Image (cartoon, rainbow, N blue to C red; front, side, top):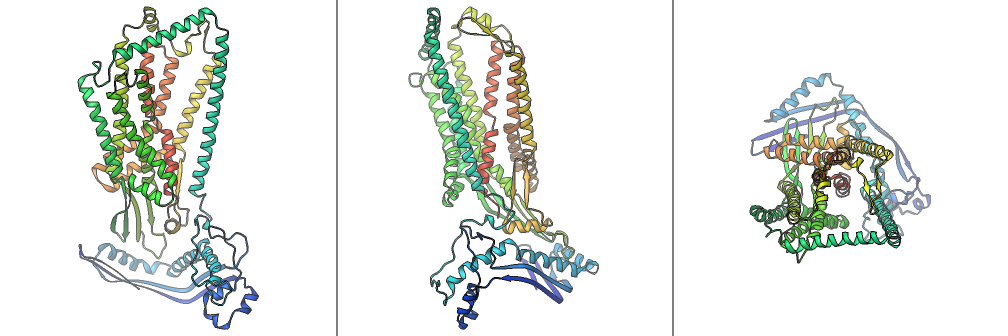
Length: 624
């Protein structure tokens, strides 16, 4: 057997001669065959050379939609299959090697071959081959061939001249190590979410109904003084809203906002739209294949690529229409919808959109902007999912690191453009909301009363605050509620830390890739489990494989964004809330704390990260 490789660009030429000599080769096979006697006796003698006719005499297995045996009956099965050579000789000769790596590997083998147990090594290799032949996948293929053989035998009454083999729905159950298919997981996950969503809606409906009935009962028992106080409060709010709508203009023309900000915000919105378009239409990442043989490495770039437009098109074409629609809504439509609404609100006067309505919309935009980050987190999962390494097995006969195959995901401009646009969009939302409230504050600076100013300077913590109703009755937080809240805060911190330290998801390779990986790691399952910190570590370390400065900066930024949004931001939000609970603050301090909590809450992406894992599992499926 000869192996040769030519490289015209570098002038490489390798011509190897590999020979294997086997003496006293013994094949031991125990084959179970279930023959239907009537079929065998009725088969014409002329069809004895037709393999389909011979196979049609065996017991036909009953297969399901996936092409797998529905019962425990056996038609043809290898109960024992071994191949052993009593004496094996293996030689490796380099006829012409211009590659130092190949020549060094050959010389190393020639020096060590006298000390190697070539007979044992060859038998180990034969055992691996027999295990593959006698595996579950081989049995499944035999069953499918037996089920089709009767339709391809001319003398069989079931013969169909134009017969074509059926296309089975799934191959996932062929191997006993394959877990539940991703689609089934997604379906179950969606069912759980539907029930959870329905339960939340039911609770909200019941609470709102109870609140409404209690309010009506309270109105019936309300005194004249209470009615007067409520109407006075309502008139005050109406006067406040009227003053804001009449004395303020659009944010673009408001004197409360510096001129440079009024001009800069629309430009930032348009730049955001351009960055989102660039990210969605450009290449987000590409998968490079690296193949190494005896020290020589050849890289095949862009064997697979990721982009929003291409991924949606592939998902729709391959039947994952629900996932395609989901990605289009959250990552395609929503970012541009947010920017369009923001642009409109910046220029719209108060007669079009009232100040109160504008604040409500801006607040919702700020809180929901995180969901356009879904496709970036999905690409994160792709960076991990396609990081596959296949190494040569540790067999005495094979030199160390004789071959190696690696898949590496290289982030491209599309990913970075999306991330920059998302961060810029989130920051601009905070600034726009801040200047909206500045307009309100400037307009209502003389609206508050003296008593309000006196109460605003009083410092008190939330746990010590006295809550008063309209009748003047006061109430304070009980000790049991305070203890329960502290315990709940520690539980939340513990759950978050466990969620980041423990495995969040796992990736298992099946098919040819899975067999190759398991062969290189002594037949251990080709499965890798990842925690949040594992993902961050892998993303950072991946920059060292490319050696490009831009990748170091970009991947480090991605890792920082992941840690900040999934772990640090939720912890910071909880810390600020507990600070508000324990530390005495005046009204201005509580307002600053509220703004900080509101801003950090917009950067809390834990639920987006979890949903992205589900989407990535749905999109990638088992790696084959």
